[in-house]
Length: 125
Image 1 (cartoon, rainbow, N blue to C red):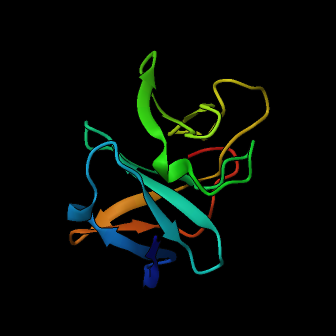
Image 2 (cartoon, rainbow, N blue to C red):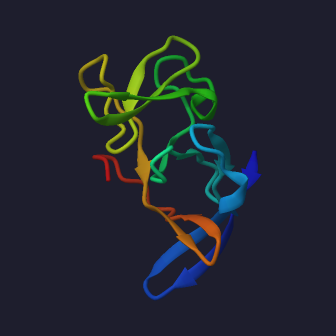
């Protein structure tokens, strides 16, 4: 698990997660945020970055970063390795069950480093 460090840019705080070169397409990286939350960080084959909860809401296990990246009708997804529940990487919404979602975080690259904003988005990004 990568431990994040915090930097401030303008009015948004960004947390350094890892060097972009450390991410391989479709492999997740778990990031421990300063407040104790865990994010799962993904780079898709198309080059898009996503950060969602690392905690599986169905089992409570910290495993989403080990999930299977995929696509459902054009929607980038992550399937939990535990029960194979599928979530949108964009919004965190479960594609298998109503009302269940992963929190999402804004994510960007800055000078070759992947950064996450510590403000989780409950309703997706």
